[in-house]
Length: 286
Length: 331
Image (cartoon, rainbow over the protein chains, first blue to last red):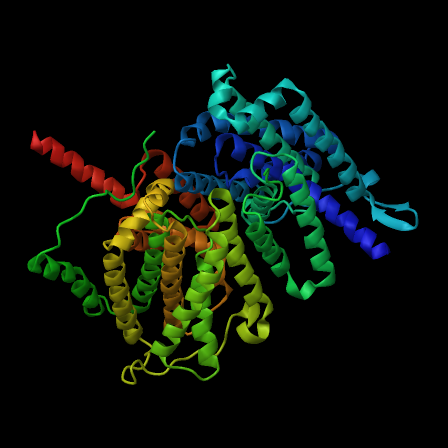
């Protein structure tokens, strides 16, 4: 029983990190139809910014997360305005090559700046210990991660469902031309959504620095997981990827625990089965 | 908003006899290389194998418009098939190469049927996942594949019972060059056939092709299986000429590298692989020696610059230069 709860808990923590990082990719895919393989770069940079401001400048954990989030969101906004926007009408191959090039450049720069080794995060004391709830001991860090993740996700859903900005995004995902013709400035909307998505990825990268280790290979190593979350969850949606991320987090954690000999074979096989069953993702509207 | 079409849609007149003979000339020059540059045979063999591999990818990316990030999976299946057969006593090079092709084709068929119903990001992800799946299986099945250490004790008997694989690498050189020539001739015939033209049609506009009665799914799966078989052949050749096969031949790194090699030369142009592979391998040799970071940076900048400024790779640049000269002198 304790094992099952522990697995559930670790799986949910892992899934939340995957969701925070990938949700921006889903929204930008749905809005601009841009295949942005480099989305993980922003999560990695968020992780580096968080870890560096903590380890080198002694900034506490939460402000360090905020610093990473803001810096990377600004970078995402600038990149969208200067580079990405020129490629919206281009072929899928061009978009893939461009974003793949961006990954390679970022891997090289990070390696030059921080070296090839992973950057361990120095957790504050209040997140280091264990917390005992009903006879089950859980690490405080992951507990905080789940709590904080839940708050951010609730905020995101509120913005998406209840604010004018969210309504505009939903409108543009459904029908860009129509949204434009009723006076929504889609170009500015894209930039804002891109900045928001990269900021969330940075938050996920920083918050999950202890789950997905911050190292130069980060955007390549976890790329397939981010793509799985978006493809299984459905493009342009924010709730589908949540279900997908939790499912992947739980399945991967359970597989690693019960069938370590099989590695990640089952998770990939599972993804194939899901997408043969529903090629457009699990939340497909009928 | 028009994208540069990878290959111009024009019918070239069938080449005359003299032109055909002239087309053989570069092949003869390359076949004479061991005389001019002795000692470079093993390097040249690697280049031939990679060109063959890139050519199989060009069928998918350049002609059928199927972008894949998992092509190494099929290369690895061919490579491991040849290696495992050799360790278990089947050591004829031709037989093991054909077995590698068949197994890679079957793998391509199974994955292709599952993947090719999807498009865009989902298809990209599935191609990656298919190669990861194969990688993980090879990684865990250590009894069969040797796992992380690679497969040891691979050796093959003499080619056709006549030419043993020598230390100088001469047999391997001519063997892989002959295989490349055969595959090139086959691919050229394929892309100029009605089947090849229907692939370009699907790449440009699949809805229209479906509307004129072209069985899209069937064509896409067929080309995927053909490209898989050729990738498997390249993998088998790699195993045979190096007498070794390791997890790298299934890796995402190789999938990415081969795509970059093809794009660097120019996809959808048939000769792109012949230009991109040597340039890439030369640059890798120069840059990666100093620091891997430089190599990543170089590749990344080249990719971004090519997409933003020079679509079509090296051959695309050459094509535009030739066209510019033609129009200027025409006036």
